[in-house]
Image 1 (cartoon, rainbow, N blue to C red):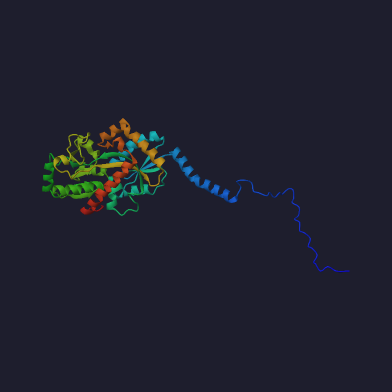
Image 2: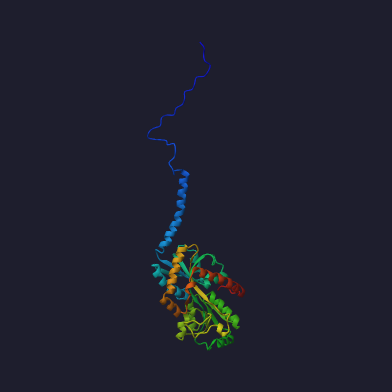
Length: 355
């Protein structure tokens, strides 16, 4: 009997039968690939913040807004801010709370606004001094040209040269002669703008003044009326005091005579065109505030400036609202840039320092 040397065949392996309660499909259902599903979820999650921001902007505002005023209560910028925001709240259907933060020529208030959350609930009313000139006077921890989102210019205003009522001069020519014959005359200044104009005035008229800084216009007006200082360049808020006979006013730095003071000449028409100053007040928000929110605030400011009652009140105070076509964020941004290019070199050339 022959024995086969061929190895016995191994039994063929058979997988165990599948359990009916745990089927193994040959293909994965359409659209259930893990990587694709993950990417789809990731894209959706990334879109949520943008959708949330858009929803917030569309519902804005849902609570009170704070407006920082970089001066003490009663100053010109404070008055303008209160007049305009009182009308803006009607459009926004929310109150606008005024927060006065004075100090360092308005740079403390501007700095607070620059560091605020850019959600439209903290804005500030600024002016040529604290939103432009301070960049040449101070070492700031924020960027005046890049850390703010302009909303709208509000008013175009100038300074008046006031004097205590006992000054004997009847007009500007006599005043300059009186100043030259009295070298101890004192001039109050209420910020970087008036300080700069006072320096230009001395240079153009050949006079020398003892400059005394004040933290606000209210204190300067009080000392003018009390005779503690002799003259001062201040905003039009002192015109009611002139009409009442408590102060004198000799000229204005505006390009044209103001409707509120048609009898007071400009420096330009009196032969001193370099003593000209056309300043502005405007509303700003922190950089990064959504454009839709900026647009909502701008629309409220435009509505306020179009209100006859608001325009009349501003005119009484000596402030003129900008024309409608210039009440835009772009216009305010252009003012800041142009004034920085104009005034920063002049300040450095004159050597004026912050007080």
